[in-house]
Length: 373
Image (cartoon, rainbow, N blue to C red; front, side):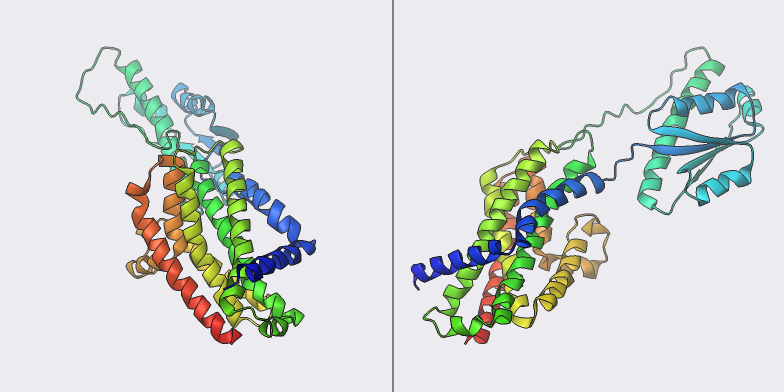
């Protein structure tokens, strides 16, 4: 094996890659733009709940319900109506997120010391957000309930209760950006390495230079190294850039070791580069390589636990996730960013990525050798 031939092939690859003006923004600007867009867009935090209100009681108690929601910054009282049909139409047309109906006997029942009901209507087309909105509404109504009880029963009442003091570790404010942004960093690295590696060999075939490489003294293994080393360097550089951007722009805490993060990135690249090489052996054109790449990307994304918890998936699908390198890399990158854990905790994921990466990469190299020979 000649390192001089590999060095010149790497040099040729970099020149060829950056000579194309279309590749420059994809390699330099696109990752940061995607991180910026995804970091703000992919969020489950609910900052505003648009509210519609139907007051059929017209009493002081019903106005207290309105005031309780107006006093909360999350809720925005957009519509007050006297027509139940109009309230339902507002929900149907997505003018409001949540509707509250106060029945006519609401105030009378409260003054009698009886239980009064309030109807809550929520747009359930997005079930996760609907659940959070209902939880917020229950908190407001629970606080109002305590206030009304004190007014009706001014004397002190002592009764047993649970003193729950909840402490959230690693993400105390439950910011969804802290959960999603590290995952986006991993996903961007996977996209770029898969896409460019899969098309690296195809370009040689389409340009007609593959035959010229075959008649040179370069061996198949040297060609593979020369084709993959540039993308390893680019991937690590992009990983550093988007990590710095995530820490200083989105204020994502980086509690763990950068060295372990670099090792995990290299192990993850074994799988992505191997899959890219495999795609390059089965595709005949760049269009085919790009379509095949996206065929791999979607299952990797869906089965990684990036958005949907793996524990909620069917058992058969859960077994399939063990073949997904992104699953392990997400655990590692979130553990390093948010928890600050080290090798004593992350070694199973690192070992799994190493085994899976070596199997995929060596299999792709073997198939590439046959095609090259």
